[in-house]
Length: 273
Figure 1 (cartoon, one colour):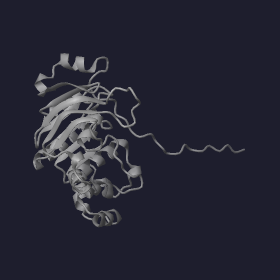
Figure 2 (spheres, rainbow, N blue to C red):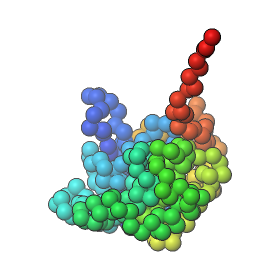
Figure 3 (cartoon, rainbow, N blue to C red):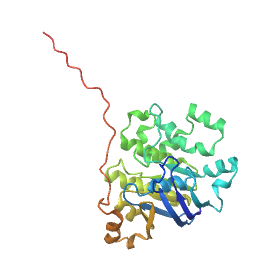
Figure 4 (cartoon, one colour):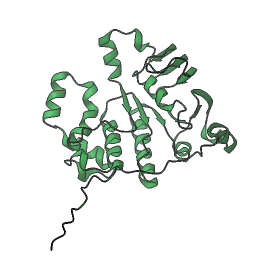
């Protein structure tokens, strides 16, 4: 999918008066099938850019074009059809806790389905073999029929990425896909996403805190700071000096891995005499 931003800026609808925009006017062109990573410190505007590209938020000024179409000038039916060709994977996957993993993964197909087929799939998870194959690429095939609330934080994040493999999308937008993963799992997940996008010719845009992973896996790196594009370079040109200017006091690199807190009830001690 061809993406073009022409002086596109974004101010969040809930922002207070006088607050700085989330994104200052930005010019950007991403070719069909291209793969790029967006890096920058916390609050740089990475997630805002993903929401803008995913048609979740409308530009405050300027223009977004996807395959030559302005999404916000399309009638409702055409906009829904365009959105069905996009897949936005947020940092925290929206997985209902009591849902089975197989249903959560197959939900990646929902944007391309009609209402009837969607309801039938949610009631009866058809094509479990395809969901298991997607999970196997993240070493989660044994979790197919587990409930989501029985998974660790890292497992939930990988389930969300397996869902992306099920989507028939021409544009994959993944926001901080490695935040809950240890280094080994992060490398595996990133390679799976890159390989999958390349095999089907989909455009892949990933926002990452893990700068080494971005430089290792992506041929194009965007640096954002305070809503402004600082550089648009191949990885070999992203020097330590550029990273120091981009991050300032925040060290570039992966944040500490986290897991969801243990919700197992504490044992009750009864004193008898």
